[in-house]
Length: 92
Image (cartoon, rainbow, N blue to C red):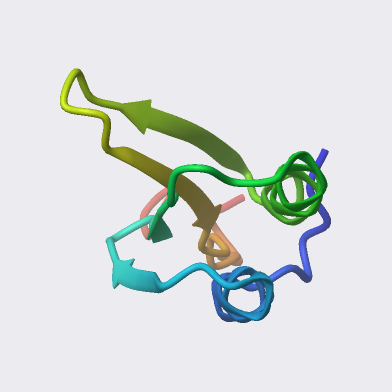
C-alpha cells in the first residue's frame, strides 16, 4: 500500500533522476505522471523504476504495436474531511 505522504512531484523527480523524461498532469482526484521508456532499458534500471512507481496509488505500462512504451503512475489527492457529512437540517 502506498505511503500517503508520497507526492507526485517526488515520484516525477525520482524518475527523472533515473534518466526518464517525465510529465505531470493534474486531475480532479489524482495527479498523473507519465514517462516514455527508451529501448533498451537495462534490468537494473527497470528495478529502480519499479521501486519508484510502487509508491504510487496506481501504475502501469502502456506498450503499443509500434514499439512505444509509456510508463504511468497516479497519486490520489487527499479527500478533504468534513465535520458533518449529512449536511444542514440533519443535525442531532
